[in-house]
Length: 227
Image (tube, rainbow, N blue to C red; front, top):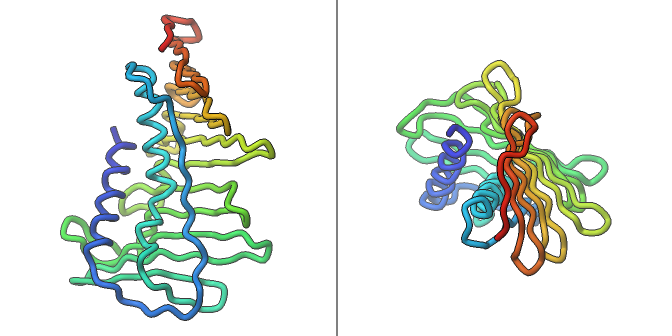
């Protein structure tokens, strides 16, 4: 599936970053690169593990920028960037601090990575609130400017974190939507929508790890169980 392919490619870039030499010099203390962690049920049951795998994928996408954390940063006004170059391939991760204390982020590729050639191509962009409790990421089709997926998260006053991950086809239509809710006590909920609107799987779990699952087809319940 394309979403899992993109996750694997991002992890590939993380590996490449970790293997290359540092190439910039820090000028001041850089902002913290955002990281967000979602969790699913840990029960060894098929539907529970499905929910958990989506939680892990969302965590990977939202935390991918941390691969640059070990690199020195370059600062120019309110713009901070981390950049590495090797063998004609340059990767630049940057953020711009906004007037309200929030940040905008981007990851840009130039040159050839040995598989594909990029010309100032933006792989993803994002925004995060000043307190880091909410944000959004947009991921783009390889070598193009069209959006292939986005991920939005927020944390309310009670510490409940909600993440919504949506997939898009080349026409911009939503092909899938996945929502995860994590509560401070360890309980949560996962909802999967087949085409962005039709719920086909709901998984809920308690703080002690037990839970329920329900499947649907065209709005009709087709199965349910516990774990």
